[in-house]
Amino acid sequence: MDDIFLYNTLTRKKEKFMPIDPAKIGLYTCGPTVYNFAHIGNLRAYIFSDILDRTLRYNYGQTAVKWVMNITDVDDKTIRDSKLKYPDLEPMEALNRFTGEYERIFWDDTRKLNINKPDIVPHAADREYVEKMQVLTKSIVDAGYAYGKDGSVYFNVAKYAADHKYGKLTNIDMDGFRAGARVDADEYEKENVQDFVLWKGCKDGEPYWDFELNGERLPGRPGWHIECSAMGQSALGMPFDIHTGGIDLKFPHHENEIAQSVIGYDTETPVNYWLHNEYLLVDGVKMSKRFKNFYTLRDIEEKGFEPLAFRFLCMQTNYGKHMNFTFDSLKAAKDGLEHLNNQIRELSCVPAGEKESNGMFEKSLEFEDDKCVNFDRYKDKFLRAINDDLNTPMAMAVLQEVLKSDLKDDEKLALAMDFDKVLGLNLSKLKSIKKELDTSSTSSSTSSSTSSSTSSSTSSSTSSSTSSSTSSSTSSSTSSSTSSSTSSSTTLLMNEGEVLDEEIEKLLKARVLARMAKNWAESDRLRKEIEKLGWTVEDTPEGQRVFKK
Image (cartoon, rainbow, N blue to C red; front, side, top):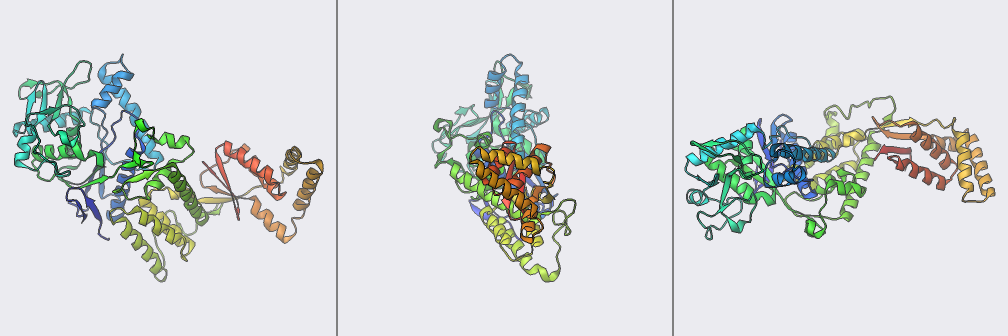
């Protein structure tokens, strides 16, 4: 196994990854706040975390990683918007219904992007975890680093900064800090460092949990920052290996997580590696509803792009660099993904009813020793790329190098499937089967239909000529050249597992006859009819390739 190097925000340098226990790697990702649709900047963060998880498993084994991602289903925004949507419901019921709706949408988005579901998904509003947050809060109070005020509990930043470094990730200047100043909001700017809230006292019309702290009753809810500290420690213990999130979370969220955990769990370094993905820009500027450049996955789909094209696009830029999203770049990614998919389909095509003889989709990479030199060289090159701080652009380049190499087809395909364990482009779903279309039963009716269609745009003499030509070419199937053409034209390439309904198959047969007759206008018309029904048709030297959009 090659060494993995990751850029650690904590030390501000790329470091060799040294897990606490190689057999039990702990990975925590700050998950979504489920109050709205995730935008494409959020989704880039989860694609990055997914690739990190896949890379760790690729190196250490599929069972060596425990990936945890929380769901923030109670905070300022979820409470505010749940009250607006469900004003007549009891506050806790409104919150649960509202956040449940957006959580289901989030998981649907991740499924479309082929993001694996984490091993553990704790919810901040679950009583089990609220109680752990209360225990942590009490521990910090008892240690003398938090205090109560007006029914809430605040972390004493000044006291912490006197004994520890506050701002390990962001180099905070404490000179302007006003001791005793407090902030109740979950999010605020670095220039406004203040004591932050661990437990928020109950307000009218808000959901709350009972909390007794040293004999005082404090009904309320957890602050945003303490949620991840408690859930991370509960699932992974502390310290653990890696914590990921967007760069916007470095302050205040992650800084406050560190401070809480240092005191509450008595560990100076709660997390060994902090990884942050950079901002996603849109047309060179920050994404914002104000600039009308705020996009969700649904917006992309409505413009005709499949979600995996966005994943493909994200992998063209390292996670630690700004990514500039444009629809031109997404179109290029879509074309690149389609090209890759076609390369895989051509390598993987087997006749209908047969199984691939080399088991290339299921078995491990096993080849004779004398065939392994170049094979292993490419695998090592891919590993070096992805292990170099998740260098996905270079890893994708290695994949293309493999597909253009002089390796045998089964070797190329085996490597592509192996690399896709990290890339997550769902290439294994592209296995094709060959099927021969029987056009004999539809030839007369289709010929009539084709002739009729042609006559609407051409003269009757042209129609007659076309009909004669079709009849002649069909009846000349005994000649070797025409036989080859007919065989190629009636061959259908399909993704394994996809089933054609009667209407689609009828249109495909009609298109075969139109192309035999060189009636390109009719062929194009039939293609559009097929596409309207949700299928894509491509013409290849072997025949028509058809697959669901």
